[in-house]
Figure 1 (cartoon, rainbow, N blue to C red):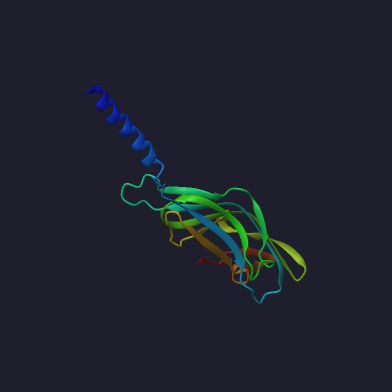
Figure 2 (cartoon, one colour):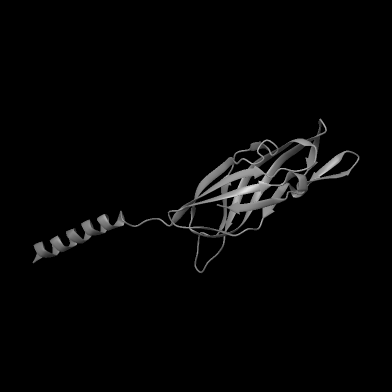
Length: 173
């Protein structure tokens, strides 16, 4: 009888170990790209340095993983004029499956060249908040493209000073 009990326990443990390999984590992948729509101003260069990008996972029921997640944490500089009508890779990350409600881009610096003269761009708060929901599905890749519109984003404030109030469209592919 002890041998039968030992055999049942041993088979149960082996079965549990084998089945544990079949359980998939509920993660998907987020891929971010950046591009710029062409415009009318005589801007020949628009350099934007993004130091980090975070996304927010919404709370759903007893979801203990809700909160902010960093996707990009290395500074990258993009010439938004040079990437018109093309996409540039920003970063990617495996994330918990669920609904994400917003994104934050932390911008360290922005420069614009207009008629051959380079100007510093002031960006209020240095954080660009994008409120656009997207879903990460289990074992799938979600690709978002951040489409900057430099022409609508750059404004002259007087005395050759410029401000950038980013106009960005989030496109889900």
